[in-house]
Length: 300
Ligand code: GDP
Image (cartoon, rainbow, N blue to C red; front, top):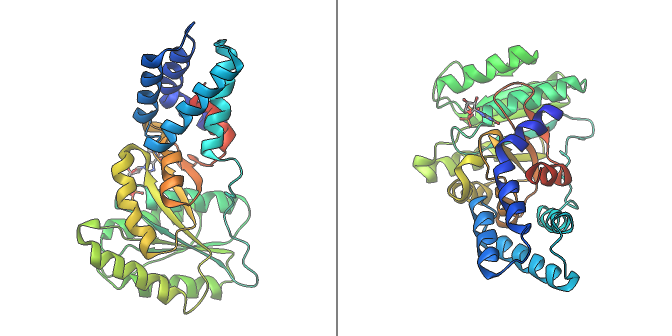
């Protein structure tokens, strides 16, 4: 965890440093407040949250009559934490009774879905859980191969189809069936994300979910989002949340961006908590999202 934290700090400390520098002046005039707002927007916080944060800070600086850098830093920390919202339940819902918990993983191609399934499988295996993977991204032969490789690496079985373009819903169904058969604790289904053909993709995802539901409830639908794509990625992701009932966000590639503010924008716009973060390509580079620790890292 310390290593992940260090990585987050490294990519995001430009944001924290420039904010703190701006806030550490003897007097904070309108130009400085504008710059602060600009910095928040640059970090992808989103327009409304950025305005709210600036207003809250302005108010507090005025009421408390202080520009002491330590105080201002504490204020910024508190207000940012409020925006990130430490009260949200970010636990994964994997406590199914008498059957495997079913997790669907959705998102646009290239955001890190397959990698996330692999990393999460490893975390679950380390917790002594029996896991089955389902490779329902049947449109890219490489996707099923990649998932099978992760499965082998982590030591869990992967259900896939040898036929490229096979029906993703039937692969998903078989994976769930297998998980039930072997009395696994969790089955994770990786899905396709070709957004070029939105209508088809959405039909297909809806179908995957409906077909799984013939066998079992779906306990978690994790939407994977690439932090480096900012607002644009967020707009694409909205489409997914319209088709499947997303229960949590996995924000990947936070190691490669200084735009950690996107966490706030995502939660606001999708109404779903960020539950996990990806901080690298390696098997250990997945961490639970913790509001306080995240803000600490942003402001380090
Ligand atoms: P998918 O198409 O959504 O399944 O995406 P993949 O899992 O194939 O990942 C696409 C690329 O992103 C791969 O090169 C991954 O190694 C990389 N990737 C995934 N997660 C992360 C992350 O958290 N940080 C970084 N730096 N790279 C990541």
